[in-house]
Length: 145
Image 1 (spheres, rainbow, N blue to C red):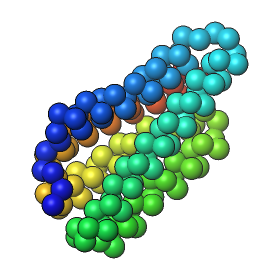
Image 2: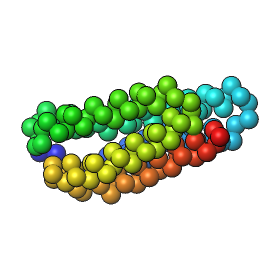
Image 3: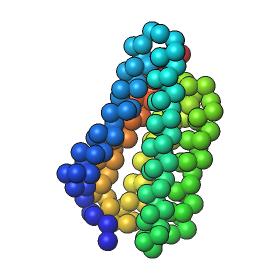
């Protein structure tokens, strides 16, 4: 049975996972050298897409354990990866806006699906992580304008 609440290790690792979001957003906002700025924007889009895919993968893991609703978990689990893949091919500002929205949608859907798996205790951490990640994407999108 999955853990009902995040452990201190999960919390620490989750927060550490925000470092690339914040670092890339700050770099993209502050850097003036075009090559470095472009690299920071690409890094932010790529990391956002990777994390969105990770969020979908959680549902595949739960489905493989037989946590109901299995079909809905499998179907939803591929959606973040597919949308994030599209974001990678868009201009940076558009890709970051799409990823910010996707991260928000993932959280809204996970509120229901986590609860049905007895994992509502993770939603506080998820909200914190989603908020910082989505805000980082929005800062990057604003900086790209």
